[in-house]
Image (cartoon, rainbow, N blue to C red; front, side):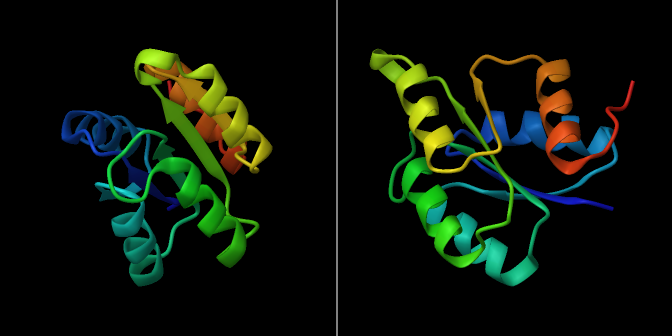
Length: 126
């Protein structure tokens, strides 16, 4: 079973993603910011990281940079609502830093599962 680390400071987003991904057959680990996510990754490992961009402490772009240094082949999906300035600039930067996929919030279940399936090479559950 593929393990996915979900990093987002919003507990409702983490819970929604965990339920969605577990229902689709993935094992899910949650973290509330990049620092927590990097600790979880070191302790439990993951096949994919889904990270929000705007978070307190270590935000998503910093987290992607740290992941590229330590695990350059670990795929990352970046998500962002973007706050007042919009998400596209942040997501474009995440793409340039090596994110395998980016999704602006809000995204649909189908969009997320399609992105996860494409990145991991697993077919999307119905």
